[in-house]
Image (cartoon, rainbow, N blue to C red):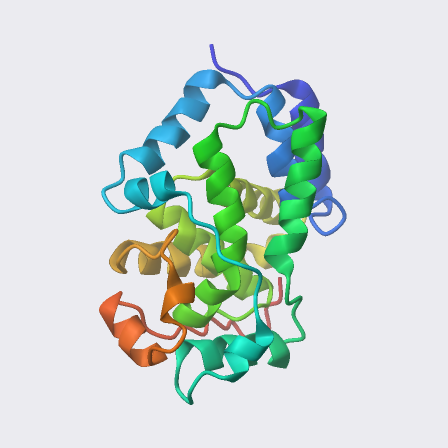
Length: 236
């Protein structure tokens, strides 16, 4: 019988207690040493058998680090301009993906990620590169509600354990520790899930090659429309 490794379970409980103190990015990397092989294989198949994500994953393309000057050269109304404003207006880390890649490579060297297949390593690295672009495309803001909405959106488009762990941690936290979060969290999750199901696939897509295109044109092509999930009086 497939079961959850108990040492991993303790770390999972730590994230449930305080997911700011022990983030899902750490929990995700803890899982692979004892993860059931048959479960991992299903996650691999979800990408490799996908008609759009499979070929993109096989290509294995990773973008260069964000070039802020390149974004500043983009025209008004373009994806590049919107991406620039999203980063600057929200005071976000410009090289988020590069920072995660450094952490990933350090863990690789220790053998901690030996159980993570190459295609899943690619998915997490590429996911960090596209994360903020996906915020721009979907309209989800970089606040707690917008973040869990975007995770649910991605989970709807691809069965990937990182997003699943985020949702599991948040729903466990709200259920066991803070019921006041139930309404805003579930509204965010269900909104993201339904939006992800209705939109065309945007996972792994090379949007860095489309920075000069009008944002509205890209949103129309992929069946996207700006989202702003707010629930007054309820904060996550």
